[in-house]
Length: 313
Image 1 (cartoon, one colour):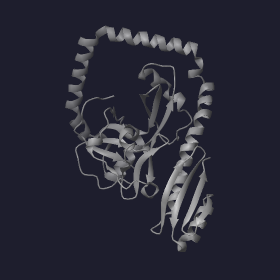
Image 2 (tube, rainbow, N blue to C red; image 1 turned 135 degrees about the horizontal axis):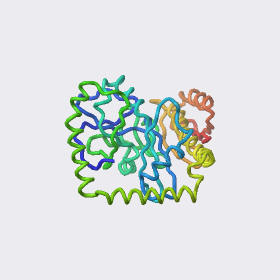
Image 3 (cartoon, rainbow, N blue to C red; image 1 turned 135 degrees about the vertical axis):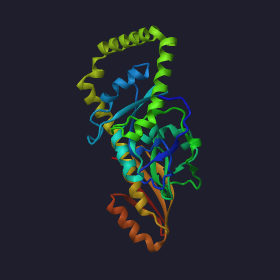
Image 4 (cartoon, rainbow, N blue to C red; image 1 turned 30 degrees about the horizontal axis):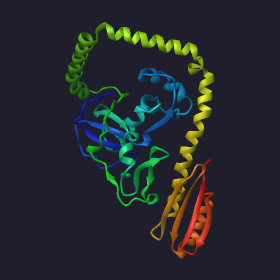
């Protein structure tokens, strides 16, 4: 994890990204389209301990198309576990913006923008915005939001803490030339810091914490067992299904809107999402047809207002 300010160009990475300004290197704020996040309470104190548990906690919940990297962040009494696929990001940037992997520097996650998103949605383009749903960053159609104001994504929104991007592609000649000086300088700096400041004390401390972790595994062997993976899978599949169901319902609701059909109110309930739509009477037949086709319940309040509700599965 890095605490240093970066001078790299900052991009909000989403699948409708276009018109990227040319720069030497880029730092990325990943939208939820490029990572999966889960909150979990585990009996560990340090991030390196939590990271060892990440594959078990997120096992069988990730698509098998790519290999994943894991990042953990403390969140109150819980931990946030992030999983992202470097190869997916590399392929997208290469195809979308002709940005080669070696030009990717540090990455952040959209959930790190929580303080901003609690105040205003962050505009992505004319059609979509980043907002909070169930406490997690989510991309939704602007037509689904009540807000008339949107925060603009700028370098000022750069989160405090980053991680280095784990490149999977082989370095080309240009990449080697660009990185050689920086790598040598960084290695010398790190060697000096760790040897002269931390020395062997750091190793002893690490060994001590490792011993504590091994003791924890002995006391709670289920943390690394197949049984706990199945238990965690069963527990968190419900959370994953809920998040997926929310996204699907929001997409369905967005299909009801048009220039003559506007959403007046949207409410997220424990088991459903409901919305109040202001409609032109000429649009009533279309709205009813689309809602019925999407398994949404429709109640006509009056000829100009309908209430729509979808069940979270």
